[in-house]
Image (cartoon, rainbow, N blue to C red):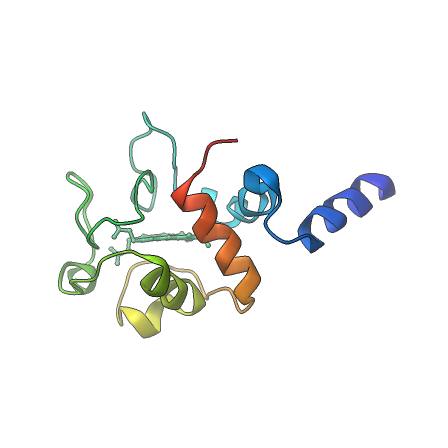
Length: 119
Ligand code: HEC
């Protein structure tokens, strides 16, 4: 058990590793609300497959908050970085109940994972 923990910590300490395992592990924090696989329908939050480059609030069939419908953003590296730092500061009144990720390397790893979720 302790060995497993040490391994996980060692992985988390690395910069975006080959295959971005760090991003994949960090995405577990999002996975309770978001799916990123092809087939999945929305969970509490919209499916995030292909979200990088997508206009905000644009996934057909997902019921976004009025705040998100009026945000008119495009999800690219800079907007995602700001969003993941503090969602409510970027889209005040958003329905995404997530406080934010204070660590810039963590955000970068998650954004890389959103761009390429392949294992
Ligand atoms: C507690 C549930 C929850 C968690 C945890 C969560 N989200 Fe969300 N997310 C949502 C909801 C709900 C929305 C829709 C927000 C709205 O309509 O205002 C959303 C919206 C988004 C959007 C905008 C998608 C679009 O189609 O415009 C992105 C990008 C996103 N989340 C990324 C993430 C990432 C990355 C994480 C993990 C770091 C995360 N979310 C964690 C619930 C969550």
